[in-house]
Image 1: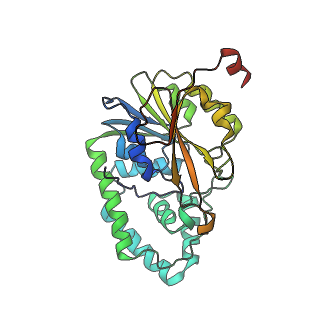
Image 2: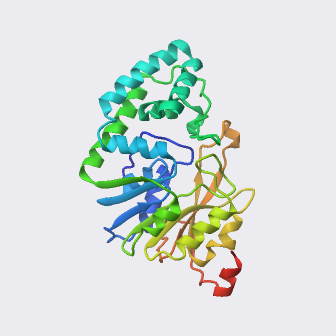
Length: 302
């Protein structure tokens, strides 16, 4: 299947895993697609049917995609902006990047957000405790070549066209609120920050939140698919056995391009966890269905 990439990029983007995720969605599903952790939106933008609800606690992601859906961010505007700011970046170097970052932290312009996302270090979207973007410069002043700008413009125009024919809604809210709003005919796709793998201001994720997500997903009436990590060459995700083993789990090895040095980029075994039976077929290395734990054991987890 053809995978389209959205204009906002991030570390850990799921673009290469989309065919695998698609393989576990029931073929007759045509209800509301719900993402409590939309991030870049790459999964839902490629897989969602006509109706979708995209949510995130990062207000700048929601603002960017809402602005795009409402026609405030367009291909021509993006091209003019990136050509102009790209020339200044080439002339002034990293000082211009930090000037844009300071401006963004005051005014929160979606175009500034796009510029910083594409000129920042290694696809990171990082905020400090005051909610200010603090991603460092990538140290490539020549970043915005004509071909690179055209690539971004094409991504914006693809989404503009998609938003015109589909009914997508964007909300800035946490996952507990989103899951409470779900109904029996929905399909929930959760891609939270991976426990023990990632943390920043908007995506801080710890034991209490992993357990809260488990509790919430254990009570939803709709079907859900949860992305997580299973293990790598060095350690296992303890929460797979501690919490998620009551659901069906299929796994697949995946390579993330994370880290500043290539030698620090290692393969990881991904897990797809669901509350409905799926046929892993040729898509996963293993599949298992575990009977629900006794109620008393579940209670002792909290």
